[in-house]
Length: 256
Image 1: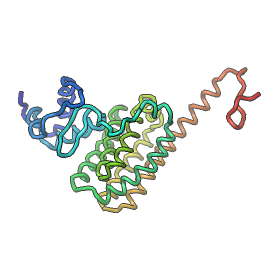
Image 2 (image 1 turned 45 degrees about the vertical axis):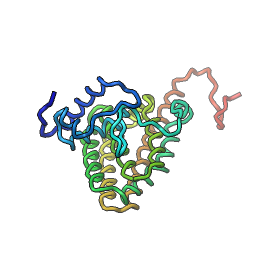
Image 3 (image 1 turned 180 degrees about the horizontal axis):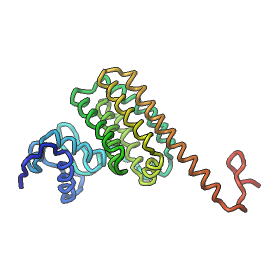
Image 4 (image 1 turned 90 degrees about the vertical axis):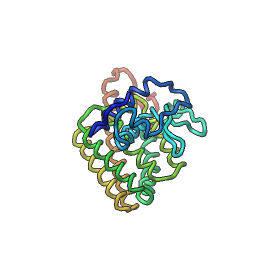
């Protein structure tokens, strides 16, 4: 069935693609039709289709490879990585340390290498993070993830992108997502939106140093918010602990 295109159809495209993916086998070799055919099939323009595909890729429901097409499921890693073991063996602050080492460098490279299409895509995604700032958790997470992923892709370094992808997939753990949501506030969310805008502006200006610094400041803000909520949760747990339980000494060992 062929649908008539809608004038502003990014959300429509996303809904139709979700329906299509739900009907397909999620095997490793399952491939979506080429963009031209897919846009005709669901009745949207190719720009709206690409924007919807970006969200689905950020969700991990599809992956794309230039010259080969779009495939159903998460991007396969060339080397097998036990994400469950990695996730259980690390913590949010370690992930933030890793992000602070990798993402500012990716942002600097993106400022030097991004195409005009990449910059248009980033501008669009920054706008989506702004419009979803007061929305539900899933919308905020998806558009924020798509924004950071688009920067990593625009950097044009496949090895750094693999590191980013592993970090990003660990961050999808439901417990970690709830922690990030607890750390959000309306003023803080508006600050994130402004920081995203500064990052895009620096990339568009081809200013690698400013782009790197803008991303670093953004991630430091996120890290500080996480640290506050983690400290608050720890304090609350200690306050609610039974009074007959010995508290740990200064080195974190149970008191004798």
